[in-house]
Image (cartoon, rainbow, N blue to C red; front, side, top):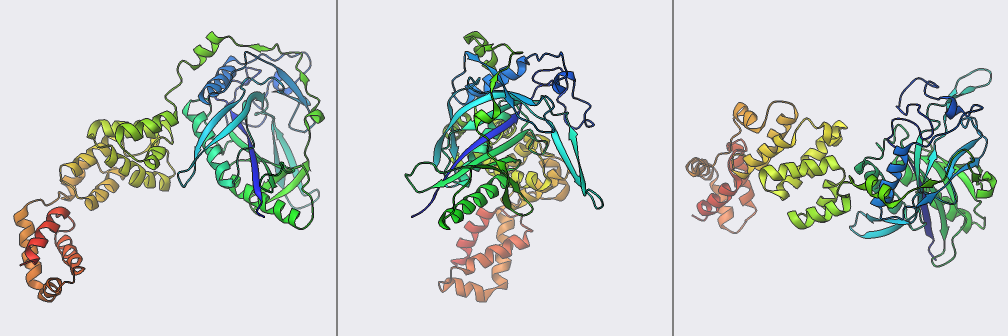
Length: 480
């Protein structure tokens, strides 16, 4: 019998507020260690936390974006544990009464299939500090430093139902959450800076059997590592069970260098944290007017925009998914379409040459050296037959390199497409006269030789001859 993975994700996304969730200290990334941790973040005697309204608004916006229940009353609790980067000895989080209840999210897999994944809850909490480990030779072998700048940074922890059944689905779901929090502007989602971190709960079972014992893989900070960590953990558990062993409930760490997970500690249960309502914080009570005001400026969501692009512009679902990968990409596409009126050509260039160039340069589309107006200008020259598709790629590369817009590059490099039938006929006549053997082969039924003649004409014209005219004229000439 086959084994079935059962996966649930806990995603911690840092909310894009300028100050921390319970203090006025800055959340800016990159400051010198321990320069942005105030008395409240450190839990010094006599201090009191004050809830950041912006964090509440952003949590509500996320809840509305996934069609979730927004709790009219939520409560902060103390999660008690001891760790060097947790200065108070407890973390302020939400337990029994989170601010966002059940919701759902649609994911699309690489084969085009779709699945609905349940979201159990999303709750507000403060981040801990960060432990920095350095190794060196000599006595002791290393040092650990504690940077508390991140302590108190507002997080929204988004907990999925155990609905995911493969590493591919888990990555698709994590990417969808990442896309959504950036789309609605509640987080920058910067994984390198720790703004978006994923914990994966993984177990295996026989199909139809009760859930197995799960292991939690902590703090995965890239989609590639998430996939590799889950795949390794699935195989580890299957091998363990098939060898007669048992899976232990524990917390594990993914080691990217060794491509393996390893045990950190036994997994705690909720009662190990001794949750109780924080006595320094009042319950959060939200009325409908607050929710409506907080969500009034939500943009058109990516799924709705994807469907609109597909239906209104006649592009396929795969292109629509790529074009709605970010709000900046979607806006770029619509700007090009507004100027050219050709959605399919715009989609082809944005998802093709432009996406490849951005990926190679490591750039977001908002930082593209080629503006939407410049791409629209290039497409217009294709539409009016000034450029062939092949020559258009050369013009694209020149615009990308900063050599001007399409018309400037065409003029400077003499790249205008040859559409003069007389000029093309002259080239074809000369090539036919110079290749009598290939002419005989074609007329004898070897139609593949036709490609030889097309290639010769394009070579003679330096790629500038209109391909359709070349094909049409060659067919007439070769038939004799």
